[in-house]
Amino acid sequence: MRKLLYAVLLGLVGAGIVHIVVLLLVPDFSERDAWSQLAAGSDLYRMTRLDAEAGGPPIVKSVDPLFFAAACRFDLNDGMVQITAPGQVPFWSVSVYDRNGHNVYSFNDHSATDGRLDTVVLTPAQMIEVRKELPEDFAGSIFVEAPIGEGIAVIRSFVPDESWKPTVRRFLAGATCDLEGFGD
Image 1 (cartoon, rainbow, N blue to C red):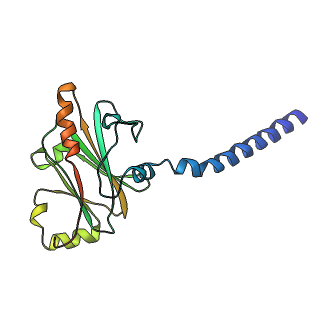
Image 2: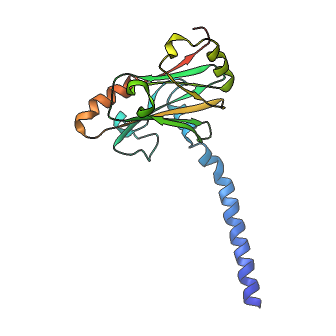
């Protein structure tokens, strides 16, 4: 009985030590989230390459080597955001995340008009305003209604072989993340 009590007590003390260590490490790990890493490398509404192909270490370490990626941070409290990229690539996808990294919406080139990347991210209240009178610039846009304040839009593009690398580089280099106001 004494050995059982000793084992339980030792287990509780060990679990307590592990719990304390984890709590002390939380601030260190919370500074390594995608929002913080992007904030350290660029401003709001600025596309930033995520992959190692852009030079330097990748911001996100788990990027598939067959995909190049770029991301921008935005704040819908400032207004809606229009994300565009020129040209055609074999495949692209866009994911919108909230500040905590939860995926809010995802779509790909099959959802777009003529396979062109043109999307507008906005809040439900902003969508009501846009519906009153659709700006001409948004005629072919995909609307992403997101009940968030701050967020991250990530564009990924497939690179099937070496010959596509220059095209995909141009696609991501030309990608924009522009703040749009009403009546612009």
